[in-house]
Length: 91
Image 1: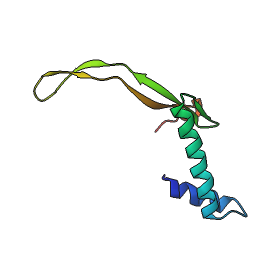
Image 2: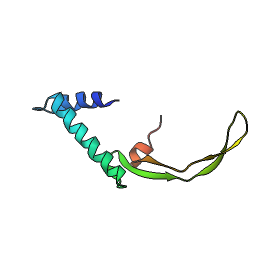
Image 3: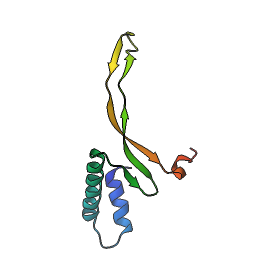
Image 4: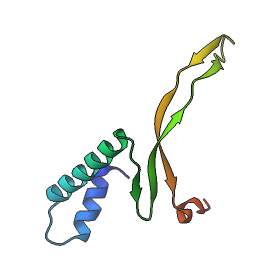
C-alpha cells in the first residue's frame, strides 16, 4: 500500500475532508515522524509498532565473487518493532 492509497482510504472514511486535505495531513504526519527519527527519538504508532534508529557496527566482509576481504562501514538504520499482534500473524 502506498501513500496515495492510504490517502484515498482515509478520505473515504472521513466526512468533510477532501483527498487534498487528507494528503496534507498525511504529509505533515510523515514530516513530523521523519524529523523525530532524525533527532534520535522513537516514533510509537499505536496498534502498529515502534520506529527507532538502529546502529549497525562496522564489520569485515568478503566479496562473494572474488573472495577479497573488504570493510563494511557502520551505518544507522530505521527499524520497525511491531506490536505482538502483528508479530504473531501466521502467513
